[in-house]
Length: 305
Image (cartoon, rainbow, N blue to C red; front, side):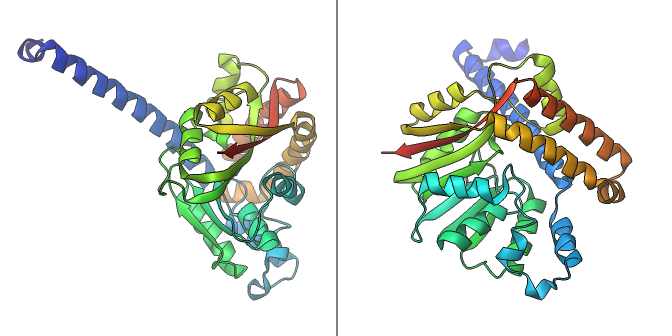
């Protein structure tokens, strides 16, 4: 109260605005920190990939991109999904792509290997970036594929740095997707393309489902396709095409859940029984929402004038 008497009302209003912005920022950062921690303990890791390669009798010095792509495509649909994204984006060797939320770097390496273009991956989680770099070095692709640790809401790149921005099933983890789309548009060159697939919902989720998806899977602010089309238009990106992937992903997610369960022994050994059981329950709920028609998915292609 003494503080209020000393400062003029206009200054107080300014301070309150700053305080509210800081509160919002702290809330967003706490969500991003939760996502970062989630991927530090994800079942798929560089070690798991290297172990899978070794089980095939392939020495580390003999690893190539063709070897890795059987194990490192940690997204829905594997290389077929990347091929579809590549067809939409029409990559050429002179392109410089940004892969937002690049994870272990599987799509980045595959795209560069197939098209000859340069790819930069951006990921929030330092351990994923380190793993992606290690795998890329093993495949001897570091000259064309690199990875940067950073926040997709505050990208560490200059304006107009890339000819194409891509993402696969990762934007669902990021809060404030309008800002994410704005950042993607900022770093995209005029005439550039943005092509991404993401986990979406057909309508606004119930609070219970939204809370459970965040607690179990670290999905933040699940968007609808209508949300994305609005955000793209607001930053000057023209929608080219959308492809509904909901039915396809429902089938894939059932198989993917079975795959995670097949890693039970390795996951329990590395992370403990409690972690495995908690993740298994969360994934079962997630798959159930797709089966019930609550969740959706789409591939989105937009263009910057």
